[in-house]
Image (cartoon, rainbow over all chains, first blue to last red; front, side, top):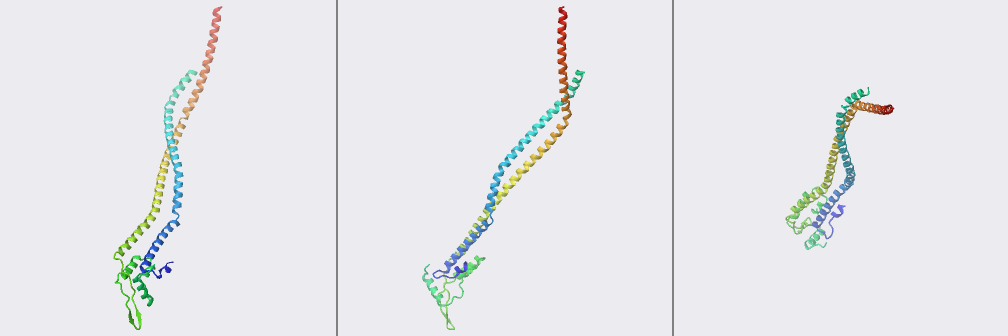
Length: 103
Length: 179
C-alpha cells in the first residue's frame, strides 16, 4: 500500500509527498485504534451489561423491600410472643381454681 | 500539482543524472521513528539549498539534488502533531476504560446491596428460629389453656343443670304452698 505511494510522482514535491505520507500514517493509526476497539466488542458487551443491570435493579429493590418488611414482621412476632409468655403464666392459678370449683 | 520554478529545475537535474538517494522519500518506510526520521530529513532540508552544480568526474556529469529550505519551526510542529495524536488516541482508549470502570463500580454497589440483604436474611432466620423455640416452650401452657377451656365448658354445663334443677324446685315449692 505504501510502496506505490512512496515513489516520487511527476509534479509532486518531496515535501508534499512527505506530508501526504504523514497524513496517511496518522489516519492508519487512528483506523487501527478504532478497529482494535471494534474488534474487542466492548461496546456490545457493555451495552448488554447495562441492560441486564437495569432489569436486575428492579428485582433487587423489590427483594430488599420485602426483606425489610419481613424483619419488621419478625420483630412484631417477638413482641407478641413476649406478651403471650407473660399472660400464660397466670393460667396455672386459673386451672387450680377451676379444679376446686369442679370438685 | 504543477511544479514550481525551483522544482522544475530540480526535476530537470534529476532527469539528467541518476538520483543517488532521495532523502525525503526514505521517511515513507520509517514508521517507528518518525521523530528520528524527521530530523535527518529536516537536516537535509535545512541544508543550504544547493544549486544543481555539475562536476565532471571521469567524464560523468553529477549533480546534487535541489532541496527546499525547511521551515524553522518544523520540529515544534512535528512534536505538537505527535503529542496531539497521542492525546487523541489515549482519549479513544480511555473512553472504553471509563465505561468498564463504571460497570465495575455498578457491580461493586450491587454486591454491597446483596451483602446487606444477606445480613438481613441471616437476622431474620435467627429471629425466626428463636421464635419457633419459644413457641415450642409455650406448648404446655397452650395445653393448659385447652384444659381450662374444657373445664369451663363442663362448669357451664353444671351451671345450666343447677339452674334447671333450681327452677323445678321453685315450681314444686310454689305448688305445695298453694295447697
